[in-house]
Length: 430
Image 1: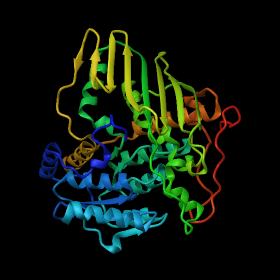
Image 2: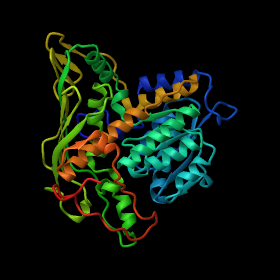
Image 3: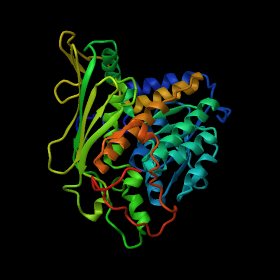
Image 4: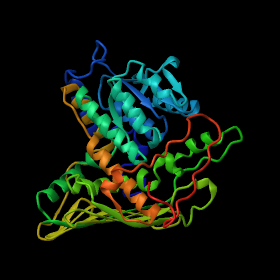
């Protein structure tokens, strides 16, 4: 994550005073919701996806409640699972109770975790698998922490929305990894915007300009499928491209400000200017998209992943009576104009707050449901990507009905052709 997003996910095992207080409060509440909790009120957690984000989320879940244990883990690759398990045991001690019999790997690892007697499951695999795993988790009666984005194509989003209906019927909680909604300064700033502190919102300007991320070099023993899954960031079928995988955070903040009403259209540009080698798969390295809402408000959005460039991760909202700044190097969480204001309250780690609130709700018998906004924000990102890939203006209703399906022919370790890089004006909307 770039510098403006502090604290970072890499600090997942640092327990702040606020986090500890939240864990104590959560643990003091009587359990009323989980149908599977053990007789000693221990909440059993399963982790599906053992990369850095999954390991971080597992640590935060274990810090969120005094009577919680990690009991099952699953990942496509044994080495990723073993490394994650080793790190979590070192940091969390007896809260990690994962036996070899409750370690699963391969494409079906999620099934083993869901059948290991867990109450809560953490979904942190590459985004392509999210709709499948979320559906299976809810069908199995598990509460879910669901990392962003929730899909990479329209059919995936539709699947998540269908699963949301099942979760509602089963009274199951789904908490989203769109973490800025759990950031206290952002909550207060957005509340003031909604209360009219800057008048009517007329425009929003959002950037996610950052550097390049990790890459795993090929190994002779890897099949093409394994290479792609290990480098999932760079293949659209796995990540949705970086506008979906990363910039979705910025789009979600804009959606939040607009009361989660979707934009009516998107048009923009994107391309692959610097990251042109085969190691970068088939994704773009920059996008600039304009989203328009039914009331005429426009979101001017851009993102870039290039080395050696100036970073800028910021959100500015322009109203008829002032402006607001969510992320900004100099004045984050502030309002300028007649109602000038700057946030000065507590700033607990938002990644920890997600889990504190989830586990406290479970103990209190309350349901959290983040599915609508996490689905719509994901679709906004897919819509922007599609506008750039095709070079066309894309309508929301058109996108919701899209038949585009990025699912590979089969899930097995073997050959897998890389889809061609999209060419605006030539790539067609499906």
